[in-house]
Picture 1 (cartoon, rainbow, N blue to C red):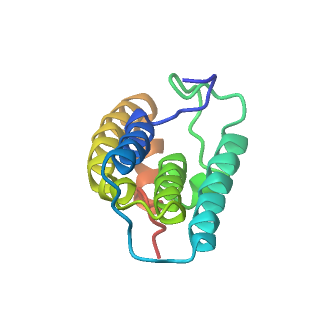
Picture 2 (cartoon, rainbow, N blue to C red):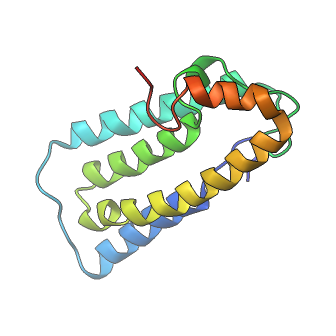
Length: 143
């Protein structure tokens, strides 16, 4: 892990495995304009970058404060959302059925990690975290 930049290993593995399988046995996904894929990659990158800005100097592995501003006001896990968009965008831009096919498996692995992280944050921040969870959706915004 780069300093304070959580890179979900499952996402990286999903992209790498998908691209490797593509070399062994090509599986072209339905034809979608590559620009759509690159737009999704850009959106994911922007979300991750804005999340890092909101986090600032907070050490994510042992936070001393609960980050609730910026993208964290919209979703409790914007970096994971950003990484999922990056994988989706790469799959679309590369027209790789394999990269896209790994998304559900990566999503399940990341979700397991998110649940573990949420338990830890709940123990660390108590009622403050529970109130945050009541108003901000895990992955998608609440209405």
